[in-house]
Length: 354
Ligand SMILES: C=CC1=C(C)c2cc3[nH]c(cc4nc(cc5[nH]c(cc1n2)c(C)c5CCC(=O)O)C(CCC(=O)O)=C4C)c(C)c3C=C
Ligand SMILES: [Fe+2]
Ligand SMILES: [Fe+2]
Image 1 (cartoon, rainbow, N blue to C red):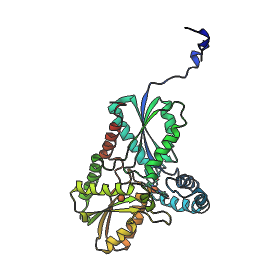
Image 2 (image 1 turned 120 degrees about the vertical axis):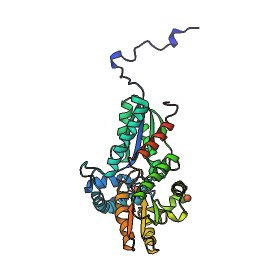
Image 3 (image 1 turned 60 degrees about the vertical axis):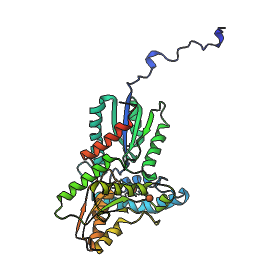
Image 4 (image 1 turned 90 degrees about the horizontal axis):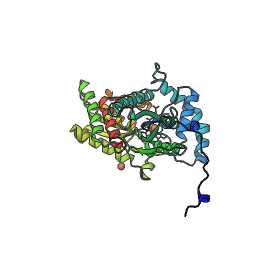
């Protein structure tokens, strides 16, 4: 039986003119990289390193032990040495780091491809895990622009807790604050995708074709992580080893023509081995005087490749008697790379946009 007393009062919830404007629905594609300092001065470096090195996905020591050491010792010294290293590679014209310049180029290339395919239904942008532009600011912009679905793409070929997982954590943390939370998807690691391996192989073939003498060996130098992370279940080590194997198979090379090493050790713990800086010296001493080095864990050139590999690691090789050192740049904004990344994005958009 109808009982009028059980019905809600017919009070208007809002006047029409108060109603927020609802934008047409779009899909956001947000690519994410690690982050980079805003400048090479002490405070810019300290802000960036402080945020980065306080992330427990990166350094998992108890904050009670780690924070005093970080704040009082490391952050009083490292901003100077890292600032000088960044200064040696800084893009002076744009006043930004190479990682920032290249990430912008990659985003433009992906945006062009996505707009050609889907038109204005998609919005493409990039964010950084640490520093600017922040993940939070970019998700806000996307939600404001009407994105009810967001595809989040950490631009690391391999999974590591210290890279993809922390980027995803930040993405989800930011979504927790949205009143109208968009639907979300994250892109999985792509180190074994044929199109990525193909882009990598072609970049190596192009670099080799320009050299007068074929290098004795190609060193695939991956960013390291503490060995303990592998023992605790992080699959990064295995994904790096597999990348080298797939690359070798695609190039049709022998085992002796290519090898895996790990760089960028930080702190006193043992990291993944062999260490690049030691291995290149060993190669030179063993008579391999002509080597090439590439860095497949990085989607864009950055301090770790332009400064560490092409300056420090090169020096180690030459001091041990090495003669020809060729650094093969990351895939950056190469067309084959952007095609591969766009193919991965399209696949992950299935069911959202077809
Ligand atoms: C201290 C622990 C670190 C872990 C673990 C780590 C893992 C890791 N990092 C990358 C990619 C990049 N790292 C970059 C810089 C960088 N990395 C660390 C430390 C760890 N990284 C530091 C302290 C720095 C800053 C530079 C310095 O002071 O030496 C960058 C470059 C950023 C740029 O602006 O150019 C990238 C990219 C991966 C892929 C990874 C593990 C898989
Ligand atoms: Fe790093
Ligand atoms: Fe492994």
